[in-house]
Length: 617
Image (cartoon, rainbow, N blue to C red; front, side, top):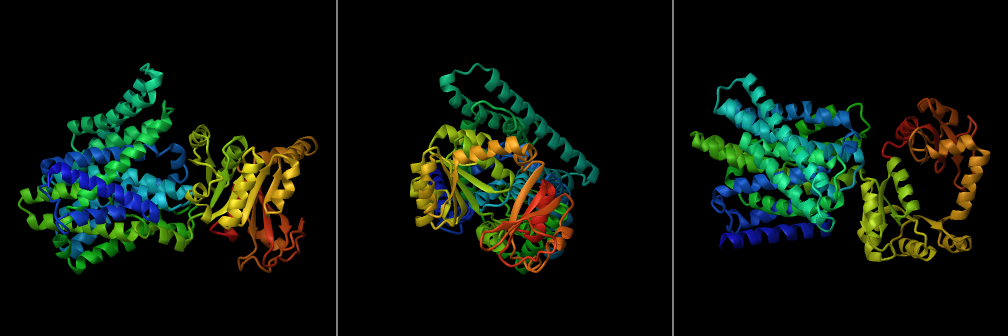
């Protein structure tokens, strides 16, 4: 088969893998690696080491640069602030523990040299957006978990790519000096980050000061960004090898955190581009897996997999997430999901060849076999089973759908996001969707009265549907579909005409009469100004949260005992009974199963009180 034909087959398999993965709600990397094995030497054999000649490393390098640029572009400072301490530990101390721990396991169980052990350990630091991104497309977790996974993926990919080159040049082919290793690492990291920042500044100047024609602005923005990625990667690589990935990631991070013209067009372009290159590269590299090298490791190889996945990864996660707001199950999820991706695969192939050139063929086979075994095992077990792991550990918050992205829907979405809800906004106006996304909200374009659109939005698994459009007919149809077709239990709706309230309530919908709600708010402003001002600050300085009394350590307790256990700055403000009646409880009131307790107070104190009794909320 010709090279063009092989490329066509790889792309076709990559796209098919993505479509199949989206349909089955399984991370696409699982299908990509299986597709690669199918066409590789272990399968039908149309792709081999010789297929691309010396051009594969350049193709992979540019492709990884695009993927890391896109990962950095999505890595907003606000997201990193979700869990800054955990992320810092994970990418510094955690990376060091992973490197040295993996190296120790390889040296002990595979009986190889320390320098080769350190080379393998450096490769396996990386997780990367190539494997984390597809997982997060099908697994919903809270923002602080997303921040850790995405931040670790981008940062540790850069660390691994540079560290493995430095380890090879200094410890294997060089003088073996540890001070030299540290110096070369910092030098290369500085070159990559510095050059990436310079390229980002140049792209920003071109887009903001280049007087681009308005009619072709989005097109030019996409082309300039693409050129910037290639220039960042190639320019840094020209200065020092394996610094291009750091430059691309830095350029993406810098541009993603400034006000860039045609931001949404650039995001859409990067998303599409990364899907194509990810599909191609993962299939192409998976085709190079040599199972003979893997089987040659024997039982020792399986011990290495266990050491990395069941010992080192959990240890690093638990050390990194202390004193943070991660629940025990979220820590378990992070421990169970750390698949390795393209960086180890691509660089392992390169340095296996380098070791053979140095006359160390057995160590070259050990390097390739160990790295590909870890990649294969973690992609199949961790990436492939990530949705099941998340469901078992109950770390996926159920979704709240808001149908209608106008002023009411947008404001409500922002407030619910502040309360930690998993919100998705649906609107058929592309401008409303773009506005929501610019505010950091998840939004899709579509008609909320269309059952297919609601299904695509995940209504079947939603805990709440809220209709907020200015059209009562639209809202009523949304509520009917959600209730009767998809069985959503908790449904609320904005009602614009007071005469329509009965129609909504007859469906069991919580109807919010817009005129009455406005009148009630105005009354509060006039008659209870302090309460009104405090209510407007909910989610920032103050908060109100309600939980159901189902936990064993709440049933039978008095309100006085509960107040003694919750943090200062928070009280039990209201108590709601099974029959729907609500009262301000006395201290000696005893809680019963099915009661609902409302905590009121400072935001942090209320959050800790809720987690004290309902740790998964």
